[in-house]
Image 1 (cartoon, rainbow, N blue to C red):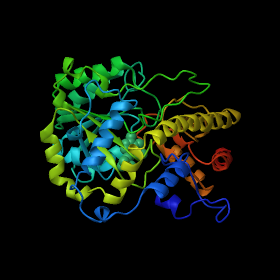
Image 2 (cartoon, rainbow, N blue to C red; image 1 turned 30 degrees about the horizontal axis):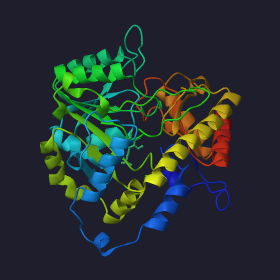
Image 3 (tube, rainbow, N blue to C red; image 1 turned 90 degrees about the vertical axis):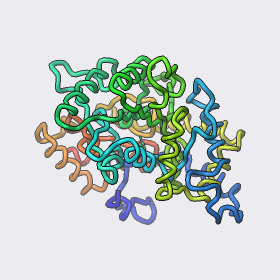
Length: 405
Ligand SMILES: Cc1ncc(COP(=O)(O)O)c(C=O)c1O
């Protein structure tokens, strides 16, 4: 990330700079969010204090609960303020969860490919081991998001325990990063059953919950099913089920740093996170900015509609460019990125060849997230963020194409 940002492309001031299409940053609604904050946020004396403490103001926690009750999550039982703990980003929440739920050396299941940040969130402080789940190792490969794939999680868990790493949790990214797809309800229920069988915590990272869009690939995209909307009790002790949300993605505000831990039946876990929350204390200014947005009903209504429309338009533009250059991709309906397949341009079917191509692109001043970072089982896959300025996306894809020859 630093490599790109130290020499970031700018059409006017740095046209030879790095076009960054490698970070999941949705830039399509920056103007609207910036304008809302600029016109609504005033720095009160309260913003200069510790406020209500280190896990978000009461007003923010209530506003997040209200937002979850009213939007894509459709919780089965209404979310209340006490079900919500706020820290400085979802990354901080995963770090605190790893520290609170596991001993160092214990494992958390992650299906491949996985959002790269999960690895450092689990490992860096808590010393928790990512237990990667393979789907292509068997005689017949299965789709990582299918019902059949749930069995692969069980195989990985049993093998991991036999090798001395007991598994404590399953961390799912839903909608999926990097595929940009939603899981089906029956698959989510199968995960709950698996977690119940082995006493695992089920953590559903739903940070892209309101970034669902239609396209020519998915004229009627499947609706998103939050874990909060399921009849959890039928499957597992509800104290083992947790949902994560944040401001970074649906609110195009990666830099504001706010994330929410939502768990409706585990006050002890909220207390455990609170005990270490001082190190990820959300800023009172950031808190006030998100509160202002979440309590502005009229703004929210238009905002979420426009977000979805802009994602549709940017996605269409991106897939048109990919098709023009015969680049295969996984059709998506959620999030700001697309998983593309450049394997036919590798000098060999290997991670080394993927690295070689990634370096060629970097030298050609375009940066995509690599399959290797995402622990992809197939060399040659990359994740491209399409929710960026149109001209910049065109230039970025042009630079990718130039790197392929
Ligand atoms: C699935 C997922 N979870 C969490 C994060 C990080 O969230 P935050 O900016 O709130 O730390 C990302 C960022 O790319 C993500 O894709």
